[in-house]
Amino acid sequence: MLLLKHIFSEDLKDRFPEILKLLSKLVEKQSGLEYLETILRYVVSGSDKIKEEDIENAVMEVLREKGGDIMPTVAEQWIEQGVQQGMQQGMLLDARDMLIEVLTERFGSVSSELSEQIKRIDSRERLKDLLRQALRAKSFDEFGEKVEGMPNTR
Image 1 (cartoon, one colour):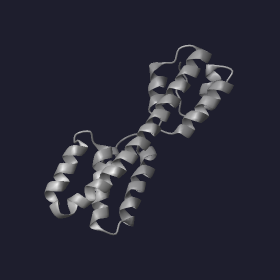
Image 2: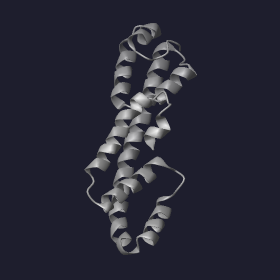
Image 3: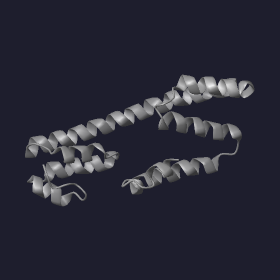
Image 4: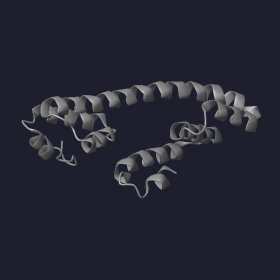
């Protein structure tokens, strides 16, 4: 589904490893419960249209005999995964904000185009590299020249 979602997107190249990672998780599964867990994880992480409570109720209703055994394990994993994802998202937000702040302090205002492009970066390593470049560059133009794919506009 993720492949279908991004097949015509400009970011397919960036998303493709994530898609393959999801596929590899399915290939490793050996039981129906593992497939169910994978589906539940996908629904929880991929949609804000259904609440965890609604998913739990649906699983309990459809799989009454096994649902009671499944849901505590899945709920524990959701909590752990949610905490980890929250921390990762928080670190990404901080890294993006810090890069924009450094660019603004060093070179003046940052264009909304550049700011939006920075906000779409989902790699902490890429953001750290850009931050280093922003700190080392003598001018905004030098920063733009050294950073592939960034617009050369403030």
